Image (cartoon, rainbow, N blue to C red; front, side):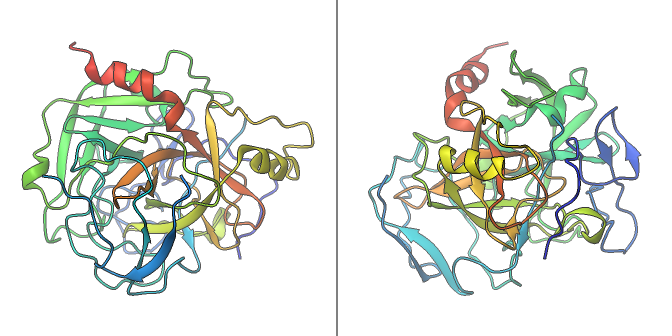
Length: 353
């Protein structure tokens, strides 16, 4: 059971061996202790959906003190060997290939992501390989993330790793790929105190060869917000519990969480130490989770919250922003509401310089 801490922690990055800036801490993984894995210096619509045998879901395949969060999964929505599948009443695939997994799933321990299950996941690292946070690949040369993870790197000093799964291993089926950053766009109204408008776009210095990289793909951008109670997924390498009892994960983890209405979310958050007068910024944030034993947790700010549309493609509807404790019943996690920033995101992606 995840213990609720007595205070809200300010945006702390996984890994707490050295500070990479004034706020975030970074932990270098060099040993074999599970609390400090090595590798890339990690931190220690009305759709009808059901669980079906893996591989049988038809895929569309046309050619403020706040805390960062990570994955806690004490039980999956579908039993092992099954996957969550929705009918065709959802939105459209953006480019016909985004949001699709290219590597067949393999059996994994509960809560551990199968290799290649989240090919859009990006690890943001300092040039000395300290983990900063996560992001999501949205086209061949742009990564979406949260501003509070990269605001300290406006002048450079970080890179993007794609295709990673096990941070301790260098012998995975397909190698990870690293990219230099050509430009960083941070939302002009980003507020580092309350994390409003906490959005950033990273332009890579070179294009990612997506078609020839089985372990790398883009996530689709969303057409709209999913309905409340839609089951969606978060993936990352963060802690498996809140506070000192938690340890960082070298192999990517996953957890399924339900989308909550913003009214329900605000009501539940008012029952926490935020108090009865707390008002959720509904433009900046959406909420998901609130189930015992399932949550994002310390360290993975920027990790994508993805939902399958009616064609089986995954759309990034949110990014891990903050929360209170981890995996406590009735206390949801807070994510950036990607839908409300689509116009700004597209403006940055289409800029020529």
